[in-house]
Length: 133
Length: 401
Image 1 (cartoon, rainbow over the protein chains, first blue to last red):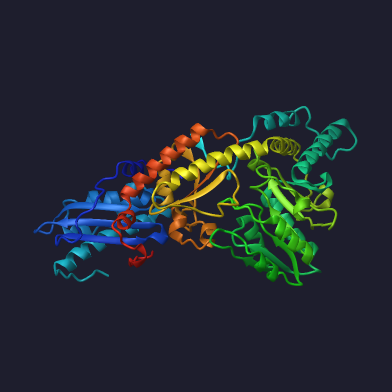
Image 2: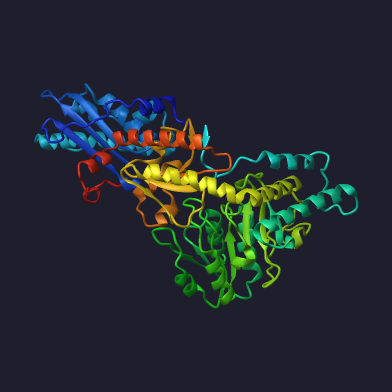
């Protein structure tokens, strides 16, 4: 199976690898997946007072597509409002990285990680937004 | 490019190619043509190959049936016995860690009313001989247990299994695809009644395999699974693949000459790999370390996912992983799962299988690249960070997907 150039680029030069202090009030952390499933993503966002994401970091245990999906997600998150961030769809990631069907779950996991990080930030800061269903 | 996937297939030895070449062109005869020299030359070459193969596995040349490879030989052995001995019983015993060719053949027979017992293995992949003996019933006709495992390299105790089968009057078939030509195999000494292997795993060509079928004590017959000209004592019809047969014969002869030296050299290199990786943190060897094929090792690098790890070096090194992501099924290796290691270890595993043409320089380069890859992937891994922070990963609430 050949990887797309974009997956290879993110895999070889992952953006925003790292760790933010999860105990800070302005940091939201999303940890999704399970080691047994072969994918674990941790995505963190730092949010300023106006609700804009100023920094994003990730660490991922997984295949190349999972690492590329989370790397891309951190790139997209920076500078977005929480509302804009929550509208990132996994299919946007699939399209950008040209993921094959067997790797779509990697993009789903990245979307889940974004949502989980936003939720964590909101809960910490007493912001309750009705979940879209 | 460094090739460390010799359990998948081996490059052909040039000496084998040389032996085969005349049989494509000037010596092209059909071995079944009894009435002219073209046929005689081909038949002579086939007979010589039978002798070379018989000598390698301690069989008689009349007991060698040529097939297209191990998968066909496995189908012929298991289905052929089930058909031939249907009057005697309908129960087969095998292992959960067998190759898919055995397991899927058994599944197919189950749909036709054959009962199959799948024996489990312990955390080293070892079979429990007492359980095997207890699983044998009056209706048992066949025990199908591989000689050595393709993923972890475990060598099963075939002598003891053969003893049990012979004492109980049950046929013993062994898929020896990974063993023949790598370690000594003696079907008579081990009490094996049917045994198979293929050319391309022993530096011979693809598309040729062997099924050994015992002719004496006991005389075993298998029902042909293809109808045709009645070749190979009526058990496998089809014009003989003479170049392939010459090739697997030559490969067998070379293996018989060089196997011991080669095994010694490769196990030295393999042990070096193990030793260096075991010096790293959170690395485990999978399988029965004391009873392994000399050229194979299966290693889990904890907190690193196998396919991602392979991406760090797959421009330079070819090998296999038990990770789900390397297969279409998204399921991690069922063999590693059968050891009860947990899916996380299966996802983190690499299989390195060395071969005749693997050099020490290649091994050293591969070790360095894999080590760098593991370190890089761990720097990206959240569960490595959690492990380093002293978090017990078993207590974390994961979101399975």
